Image 1 (cartoon, helix red, strand yellow):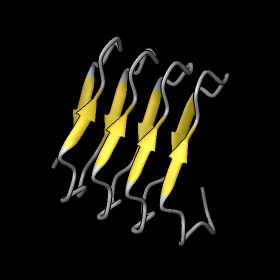
Image 2: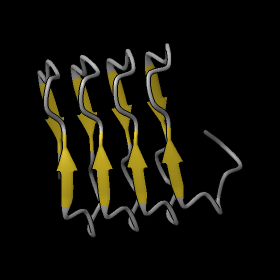
Image 3: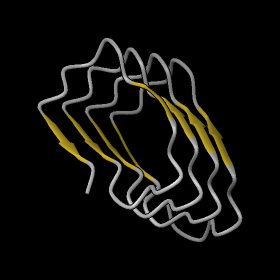
Length: 86
């Protein structure tokens, strides 16, 4: 997503989304994207992100690099093959 510099929360439940990229959204603090069809989720560079719930998606790839404030994450019921955390 581009042009969303002020974005501080994302909520997307049970949609048909397959990929979501909010990388670099530095003011993003929480994200809930439960029950979608996501296979890739990129929140890298979201330095303000504290909480993410991405359960029940079928994720194969999750990128949380540089999410230095991330303390709460729920990623159950996915098929994670690759985590990027550094």
